[in-house]
Length: 309
Image (cartoon, rainbow, N blue to C red; front, side):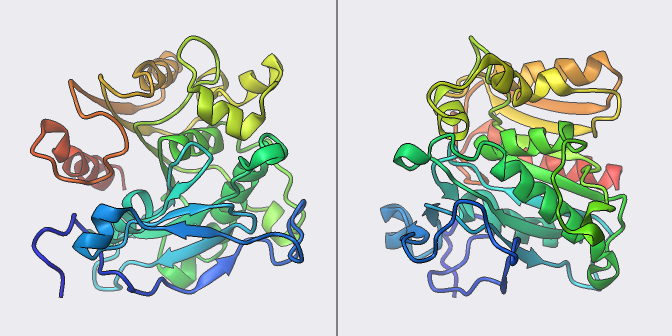
């Protein structure tokens, strides 16, 4: 039984995940099952002591998807692909992933948690800069191909991301036409999200607001300006970019200019966006309740999403 001090939508240690689906059963470039050590999993000590899941995943080489369909008696046809954050070094898999899936389920939205490539380890930094984007695109196509199975609408499928996961979500929202989908039955399905939700996102890789760690882990130590520009979503916004919901605190370690730049780029081309900037809150809080004004951001998200869908 959950204790009263559990964070919202967290679950006890040992709670099983849904069935994990490999995104690329045909194989993954750069992965050698004979030598790779596999995903490394840790659970921070405060969560261990309190008895709930708050896993950090590292060394992800085989991307996968976890489905959390909304209950048939609640579902409203919307779905969200969730990209946990962690600087492209780890994935805060529960705090910024599975907890949010259960939150969405509570008001009829189906959710899918993406376990995407991490290429930070040693010489692997920057080795596969487009891998997380391809993971997200494959996941969006798979979800859109199964709308009848999950009771969702093909025009109500969005993407959400936290921190570096927010960068991935924004990249998927602006680079959806830049695709390399080898499976013909999926290549004909759009990878464009219908909306995006960016929570304390990394957005730009251009100075001075760039988050250096995320840029280095994704693109490598010596990325070209051309590559940095490609993966700076605020530069890639067009009138076809999907609507967005953004949350960030002014005292975030990731400069708040990341959200401001993306919002301004959307506004400049007439794309609807809602942004909430709070005076304090820091970074990496997920849905944790800390007695601060920013604690209410999930309520604002619920209101925005239900109006949209």
